[in-house]
Length: 153
Image (cartoon, rainbow, N blue to C red):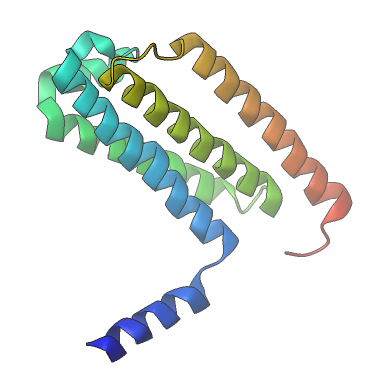
């Protein structure tokens, strides 16, 4: 058993790259983490504790499991679109977009956990503004690195 586990870890570590790790973290933070904490928040605090009307409606129609699956599906489609588009964009531009998605997922998790614990959550508009600014700024940083600094990745 130990040999199999050691071989599996070795294969994973040899094949993981920065971008594959970022895709995985983006799916975990934005899809799994934000999806589960959002569904838990709505099941404990009511559906109107969610600011996103699409996610709230999904929860009200499909319930806990259906909403989580919907969030995972949306996240998968979003990451797939980024992956398909990554062939025409630079390496660092894609990486910085993935960084922004990870940060957006973490902000969503923090906001959901704040509501669950009874603390004052951050304003949804503020989270969206910060997320949009991060995406725009990170795209510019990645584009600058791709065109002026990085020769190869």
